[in-house]
Length: 234
Image (tube, rainbow, N blue to C red; front, top):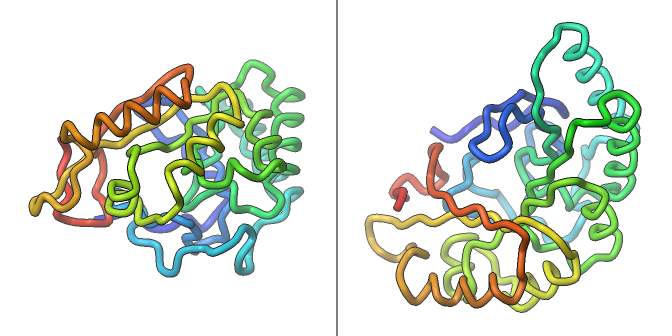
């Protein structure tokens, strides 16, 4: 089964294959998945009505509310000697869709600098909002930018990520953002309709990666139950 949607801002720490003991920050409304993609492998299940614009809907936590929640959680961790490797902005949707994303990153970085200056902040994003200057400003404040890129062609992006965002838009946005880590999920389903691990799809992906020129690429496959039950690791 996929994971239940989060009902709070701060969760975990989650044991991450990439990020260690990761204290998660959910910028999405409680219990409501908001995303402009609909990935077949999403651990939170299918997106019900993809977001058409940033800040769509209600219930977004205010920037000050996020800051207070994270500060209280870090204080509790310090009091108990709890080990946290990273603060990770992620949650059950696309965090950069938050209408105050830029301000939130400014507040979180200032908070971190005051109370835990050696603790890195990471973000997991689907890369679709990098064309917005305020989003790029917010992302650049963060120590580790893990940006999704699961394919290099329109068909793969449509089948894997459920998006019609042009690959050129994604690549150009990532190039404009600057130094980053690309995270890429490779999967296949039993029918063969969804498969980004074949030679053709991988070559298109490699061409996109070469254009982006990330500082790291994280290649991985399924580790949790996906939205599409027939999806398999490769």
